[in-house]
Length: 109
Length: 115
Image 1: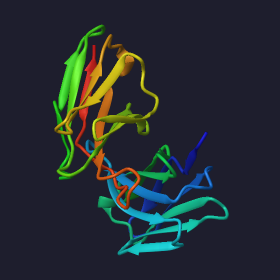
Image 2: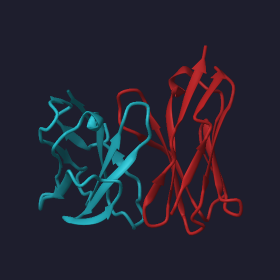
Image 3: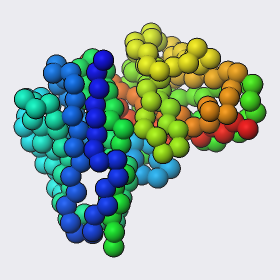
Image 4: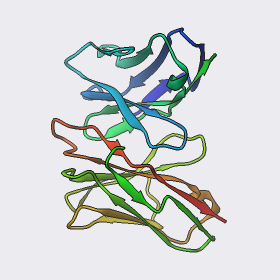
């Protein structure tokens, strides 16, 4: 069945450095790829999304890239700050959203 | 604040019992999704309703059931509870699962503890 793999499961970076989280998907018909951020004790919140007709999208310090040929997409966070510490989920959608397992991002001061 | 409300925030109950979790979607959203998140785990999709009808099923146990009412609020019923059912249960809503807006807006969750 459809599957989304997300790596790494935990990522620790120094404050100010960049963080990259990668996801691969199995369904080549997937056409929508959102990224969600879940802070401790809260529900996930959409931070950025990309559709299959676009290769890259940026929003201030965050960006998402999509490689349809390789069936993978990545979240890039630049100039990381303490408030970026959270769990990040990727997802891919054809008919239904299929979720990655999540990445715990730790920003070290 | 996503606009999705869930009640109760916390629920403590005993094994074998039955509980009902409630969700009110954002105004205008027709789809409701239910997810289970165990400690340090990912999001497990349980079930989706669209405008009162069941649209998709995930890894939902037979002991669990859900429904969406005419006013679009939804309830998730968990019965014959086991210790392993202890988890965060999230509700999310979206305007149209297949339309231009696929964004799911999550509620704050209900934390269920089965003792």
